[in-house]
Amino acid sequence: MGKAYHMGRRLKNALARAAVYIIGTAWLLFGLYPLFFTITSSFKEAKLIRRLPPQLVLFSPTLDNYRDLFEYFDFLRYLKNSLILAVGTTAIVVVLALLAAYALARLDFRGKRMIEMLLVVLLLVPAMTLIVPIYLLFLRLRLTDTLLGLMLLYSAFLAPSTTWMLRGFIHEIPRDLEDAAMIDGCSRVGAVFRVVLPLLGPGLVAVAILAFRVAWNEFLFALTLTGAASRTLTVAASAFRTDLQVRWGPLTAGATLILIPPLLFTLLMQRQLVRGLTHGAIK
Amino acid sequence: MREPQTTPPSTPTVLKASATKRHGVVHRLEKDAVAWLCLLPLLTLVSAVLIYPMLSSFRLTFYEWHLGTKLDTVKFVGLQNWWKLLRDPRISRSIGITVKYSGASLLLSFVAGFGLAMLFWKEVRGIRVLRTLVLLPMFVTPVLVGVVWRMIYDPVFGHANYLLSLLSIAPQRWLSDPNLVLLAALITDLWKRAPYVFLLILSGLQALPQDIYEMADVDGANAWAKFWHLTLPLLSPVIAITLVFSFVAAIQTFDTLATLTRGGPGDLTKVYNLRINELTFQQGYVTYGATGSYLLLFVTFGLSWYLIKTLFRPTEV
Image 1 (spheres, chains in turn cyan, orange):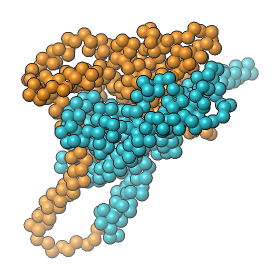
Image 2 (spheres, chains in turn cyan, orange):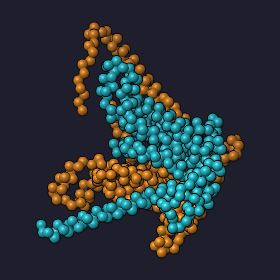
Image 3 (cartoon, helix red, strand yellow):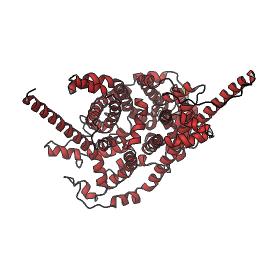
Image 4 (spheres, one colour):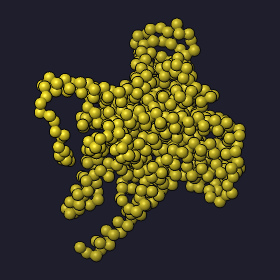
């Protein structure tokens, strides 16, 4: 092999590598810039936000936009509602899904196949199909404009996917561990608490984050089923379009506040998240 | 994995045969009961909130009722709603827009997501951080995606036009120009959906066995050959699942377009879900909207049939 060949090859490799870096960086810029813009704008004085060329980094931060947001737009109430909704939904979902997933993963019973099929089918139902009957049902049950109603609704939506996820995680835990604990004198319930739950950590985290995110981000049903009392952040955000069209200060402040919790959880829990998200699809 | 041998506690050999049999049956019933008890809370909730409304919605498609009118105006109309739906020009238009939008979305996000997965596949130092950064747009509240990108597309102050001005291109009215609005919506859509494809394909890539590549290297295969003859065929199930998932998600777009374009200008971006929502709540034509939404359900189920077959494997006990 001649020297020219090697040099040509090295050049090609270097060019390929450079192209990779450029494209990768370009995409990251594309992906992160809207978020960067929103978050930094929320701390800028109103007149600076619309200034072009944009002052991206060198500006003196201010909390005025946030103050406006809370004072003039009743933001605290929406924040409180969304928070209660998200935490409540997560609690319900984790308990329900864990119970069901354990039964599906460990116990053998008649009708098991039927339940599994049911869960898979339910995964595919589009939300829009359910909106009217649920609205009518909630009207009858006096659950409209309540956070409890939404909590139950979201828990039902999340039930199939979270159960499936946890089932997969429980499958990975060897049965022998529970059996050993039971031989040592534990009841089945005790064995679950002592053996399965600790090992299920990442799975539970993935489920909790998913539940929180869905409850926090959901829009269609929140829009239809809430009134003034239980309005959530997403519904308020959609009104930003009309109320805050001109005022980008409070708009970006509100957007930042709504953005942060799911993003934060994502960043902190990325390892567990990735495992949880791809579990059902790839396995 | 071989199960370690455990010696069972010694059972007394003197047992009446009938006692053993009864014990077995009762035990089985007991086990069944425990399992069903565990499933009860979930099943109750799901039946009330998902199954019952699903059936109720189907029933609605055979009636005629408008929101706000008294309940005794409910009329049975048989298949009329369905006939009407299949002939409705605005529905057909909406379906056309949805297919165009979803198809383009699928293509763009798949190419981008696949490319990203290949780019960020190598396990170099710090790659985990970069991968997480790539994923971020996926987790942004869909409603906010519309709100934020509206700002970017603002004709006067938006940074999209600012970027164009740096390249000496005239500012565009992104969201009000009929020729550009779909492009603008697709860019936003790509921003949000590519990371999801990236995630799925990356997981697929990471699950590939490495030894085949080493053997290919020994045989002198170059990067392109390895990709075409090894990676792609091995990835085909993952690719198929990703395509179906992405398409199903795309045809159900609502939140982002509701805030980004509201279906406008006119009805150029009024994808199916937006039209159904308009029918149901703005026009109050509840039964017709239910019919339309059930059509979407049938389409979704049909498309996902492949998915069901792949995911639904025999129970591992």
